[in-house]
Image (cartoon, rainbow, N blue to C red; front, side, top):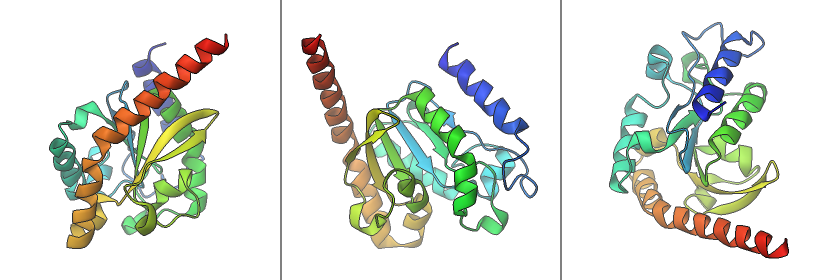
Length: 204
């Protein structure tokens, strides 16, 4: 089964899982989208009004900012994979609750495993806390952190949510500056992976 088929299977499972929270008030499930072979996986928090209507992540104003900011580093939306830690819209766009994030976690983990990215960009504190619990986004944004996730090393880059950047000129500046670091962070992550593989070969 290739990645596209695996993702379609995962989406179908989520649509059929009646135990998932927030389903009643939402229009539809908002699954991830983008390049299944992406080296960069962007994780937001939850769908908003426009995402709920269209069934696609990051299509409102925050999504348009994300698209433009990716363009500044030579990437198109289609080059990366974009998703959320919660897949149904919370009522009135409220913050997702810990129990809701936990309910979606097994599916999110499987999606990340299928994509197998080199770098995970967390957009906002809810997705950041998945990988860096207890951290404050104001303190760690834009700083890559290598973590072991499900037995594999992955580089996490915590960033502000684009919606927060739209509300504050200061956050907007930091959001854009952090994105400029991504190409170099990705190059470093790939270099580290090559070195690790070389070391493993030498041990055989």
